Length: 236
Image (cartoon, rainbow, N blue to C red; front, side, top):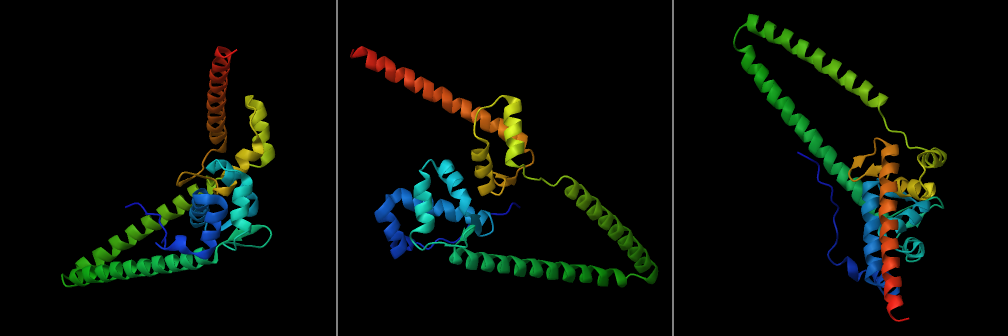
């Protein structure tokens, strides 16, 4: 069963005086930007870098000054000069983690109780059978431990390491692309180097996908420009 990612949203949040000020200053779009920032905070453990305002604006197709205003001007977030966060989000994340830990402990207790019940039934058979079961359990435990160790080695060996801006820029030049390496870096840095809900595995593949997206946007812009020129020619 896959994890469901969600956070509680007070139904009367729009009546909060601070959000009312956002609505007055930036309209409904400002409220949308605020909630998008909150979603990213939950995805990134409650804290975002201040420098990510630019990439957040790029992703939401709004001006950077709108994102910066919402982060800095309405006392909705706290910052230390490098990162910013919401005290409300932090408290709710602590509560979510606490609930998850309690559920995990309860599940482990149920599992232990089930195992003890099974072992009691086996002990009622005879001493020889009990000894056989004990040996089998030890063999299974050794196999599980070995599998866990192998998985840890595999995961530690294939752990993703984010590239530097210079590495991205060199790869862009090598491939003959023309987009800005900083925009690519800021965008994925703000998302914790996630692609959707999954951790990025190959940043070079992400660069190639970004380049294809840039080409498609440029083609659309050229088509729009040609269409506009044709319309202007009619009225000459």
